[in-house]
Length: 482
Image (cartoon, rainbow, N blue to C red):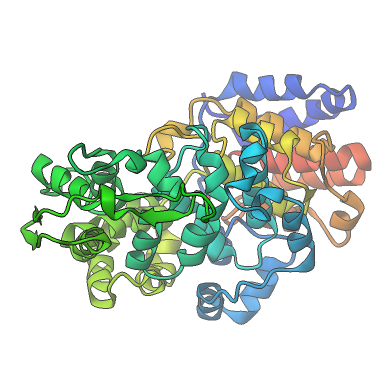
């Protein structure tokens, strides 16, 4: 059974009592009694809200009015151009995370759980406070595409470098540049065992995944023989271990490389090669039509959900014409009518967590307390063990909404350590209509009038009412979608 807005309002009514008693579980359990899946929004889309929710991690107070003034095209173009500059608050918070200030080799004395905590904190902080929200969206996309499991060996210690020099550096660059950077990433090479890929005893793990998951996609025409030949091309792509050298950096070791001739996807790679063998493979893969199709399909579904199929062909053409220029591929999608008209896309836990912080203009350190909610919702960052990345299909994330309701309540009630909401600041000029606008990417229906009335009532009740108003909005079915 799906919760109705009337159910939601009645839950909000009893919420005042439960919240006053600190009864987070009572509210969340009441939600769980009524539905296990988030109901689809049932009313017309607000174009500006939809645009902002697809290009960013959601609006902050004042964003929608400002974007409406400059217009859709100007907003999209501004988002496609990232100067890399961030505000002082974000930079200060990031500078406190030592894994980004240290060399990967020197960071090995930091326990893996602490490394992962800092990596996740950085991701939450950047998505919440980052000025270049489309860039942050694309970082999320490519981090999942080039997934690296942080709990394998000391991979986590190398991930900060990968995050900076692969994903963030090339998120709005070209796909071939990103592919080359990823292939030289010590974190990726260690995760997929290429440090053990040597002449005479090739390890096929990286070769298989670069074709199946990073470029061409499964069932795209490559064979097991191609996997074997690609593995031979990447022999000797390893990590620096020599004394007085940059330890753990990428190193091509000619002594471990198979110098024989190879044949990959119909292309002959002559004998006597070196690191260039692997570079030739990367070029073959990035120019292959199957790669253009595979990457285009993922990008279209990321921004358009189930309607993404309609845009794959033209995005594929743009890939081939521009040699994989990412801004050129996504610009037409972002400006399309389909972006506004496409079905809602369910927010994955990371998206939900950050969009709630932004909607309520929350302050956070991105630390352990809020990360625990991300874990309970099922998406601890950098901890998906398989190389395919966290699932993107809706059915993978609708099994239980209870952790979301717990997070919504604890955020609104100020019960998450290191995270808080200044309700006095937020309430200034705030009413039910503005709150609804921040937390819903659609126009209000007649039924929503009751919800907004309840929000106004909660706001006027003082501090406890603020908690109720915030919870009502974040736990509402519509806020689960973008």
